[in-house]
Image (cartoon, rainbow, N blue to C red; front, side, top):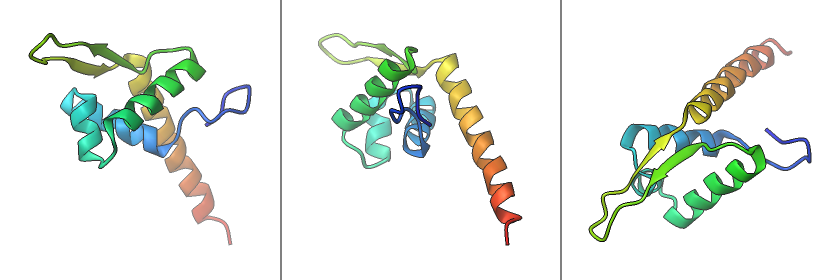
Amino acid sequence: MVNEKGEAVFGDGLAELLEEIDKCHAILEASKNLEMSYRYALHRITLAEDRLGQLLVKRVHGGANGGGSSEVTDFGRDLVVRFRNAQVELDKVLSKMP
């Protein structure tokens, strides 16, 4: 998915990352589960948020002893659902091609 400027905004990798964050409520744990560096995961989220002009993940910073958490926003969840539905529809079209 690209924005009006032609910049890549959203795809399967980011959808997978948001799904994992939704399961474990932590960007660090989600990135580890996907064998992705935390820094790269955070970069992907921040870049997409900047390009979309919407938050995908609400981050709550922990104190000196940690304790932070992350929650996928309603917008982020809706985007994942719409993206996955579009993938299903595209697969149906492609399966009918000779």
